[in-house]
Every structure is written in structure tokens, then in C-alpha cells.
Image (cartoon, rainbow, N blue to C red; front, side, top):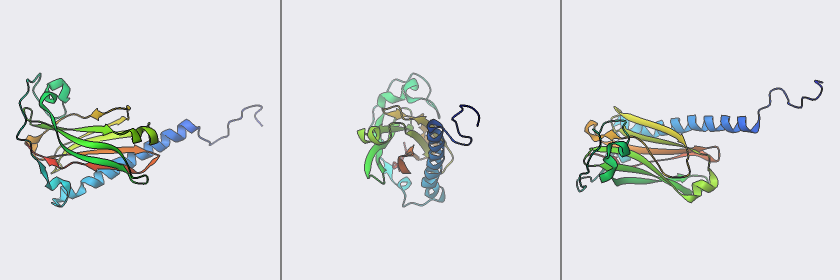
Length: 192
């Protein structure tokens, strides 16, 4: 015996196990999100990428900065005329609970789309330490913004992707060991 050391060789602390499971869940989420996007690369018109949101009726804002790919809509002023143009419920399949919404936000003045995640109270109950993945991508796969962050207990948004590169789809995935498989949803494709 080692005289008082109660730790066993090869065992992981509960925190280490949680971190390991969260890491594995994030990898699974990334794979699931990539799998959701495969039909778009193949040109499958039966996916949500084939539908388009109407964006012609929005007013123009005063911009603070030149809009561009991978810029914050708040910093550029593009959020001032933004509007929800597509949404999809994110459902925890085992519990069949709506845990949030994937929302496509669009700015007519900036001709840009970004992802927004709106959680529900159900997420706070079942997975308050979840990770959220926000993706905005061109349907042809030529441009993609990928943002992962621990769930902050409120809504989240990602950076913009200009629609000049083509139709943009928003995908949001929520990953946590208590959510199996990863819960994800995608919006219709937005052009502008």
C-alpha cells in the first residue's frame, strides 16, 4: 500500500469524465451537422436548401461598418434592419421536447444572413451545460461559418455570411451527454 493515497490508478474524476463525454458529444455534433449538409453538396432539391425565404420587404439601416463574411452583425449595424426569415425547431429526440429554435436572420442592407439560437426553458432543465454549434453556409458548400460555444443560458448568434455567394442555410446543433443523438435543425435557404 502507499500509506494513505486513496486514489486508484487509472480512474478518472467525475469532472474528467464529464469533460470527456462533452468532447465526444461535440465531435458527434460536428459529424451530425456535416451529415445534415451532405444533400446540399449533392444538389438534392428535396432538402430545405431547395426552399427560399422572401427577403424583399425589409427596410435599410444605417451601417457602422462595411458588411462582409465572418463579421458580427451587431458591430456592423446589420442587425438594425434584420428580420427572422427562417426557423426550425430543435427537438431532443428521446424526450421529444423542443429545446430551441434555429433561426436565420437576414439584413437587406447588408445582404447577409447569420445564425441565431433561441433556447427554450426545456434546455435549461435537461442540459444547462450543453454546447451549441451555429453554422451558416452557402448551399454549394463554398462558404461556411462554424461557431461553437458553451450554452450561456440565453440566445446566441453567429457572424454573417453574405448572400452574394449564393443561398445561405443556417444549422444549429445542441450537444450534451443527456441529449442523444445530437439535436440539430436547419432553416430554409435564404437568398437576397
